[in-house]
Structure formats: structure tokens, C-alpha cells
Image (cartoon, rainbow, N blue to C red; front, side, top):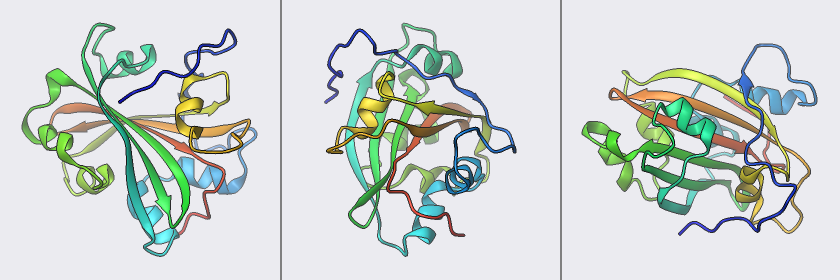
Length: 193
């Protein structure tokens, strides 16, 4: 079940996403830049970095609205019905990442249909086990309390941080578009491979 954040005049619907580059992002420390720029599977990197204490908790899954820039990336248009899956990726007791996956419902056929039944299984395990999966676009953003994604990502924290870094990737999986947003939370550890 999706709950909308409390309405607030200063809430801006979306952060400003920009293409990922090799240069370090202004304000991102080296540890965060390593996570944002990593081109491998986030699932594998987290398992390696937290010594197999990795787990997935499903926050919500169901039909929901895509944000305008998400709909544009998915080329689904504003009226397109979308499946949205939100999860927290844990290392032991700490939440390291909040992930939001979007798939237009009209594209839930073929291999993509199985993604509706992942449960606590990590999406990255499925995407990166298929050699035909392609990364089409990678963007990053600074996400603050003014942005709706910030409220979703930090809802479980007693004290929400002033800033979280986010990365979103548009994948081609079995010929279908899948958009994955990953918001890196303050407790995230060092990236290890």
C-alpha cells in the first residue's frame, strides 16, 4: 500500500537528475562516489561489502503513479499504468539502500512478468543473471527533504538526513524497459568487491 507524504508547500516533486560521469560529484565523498559509479550489480556489491548479512524487505508493491521524469524515461507517458516496487536493502540491522523499481504494466510480459513475484528476492539477482540485460541510462541526483523520494527513502529513520544520494538506471530486460532508483542511505558502508 502506498501512502503519500504529507502535503507541504516546499515539497518539490523531483530532484534534478544528471548523467553519471567519471568525475566525482560535488559534495559526494569518495565512499559515496564509489557506490554511485559502480557499474556492477548492487546486490552483489552489497553482499560482498556486508559479509553476506544482506536481506531485502519489501516496503510496497503495486500499481502507482510514476513521477513525470520516470514516465519520460520509461517512454510510458503520464497516463500509463505502472507497477512500482519499493524495497529496503539491509546489511544486518542497518538499511543501506532504498530502491524503487518501475515497470509499465503493458510491458509485464515474457521474462518481465516474473518480476512481479520476486518477494524478498533481490531484483539485481534476476537482472544480472540474464546476459541480455542492458543498461541504457544512468543518472544521479542529490535528494533532499524537498523531494518526494526523500520522504519515501527515509520514512523508517528517526532523524532523516538533510541529503541522500540517488542513482537511477534504465534497463532493457527481455526487450522491456525497467527503471531502478537506488537511494543510498547514511549507514551505507564501504564498497568492497
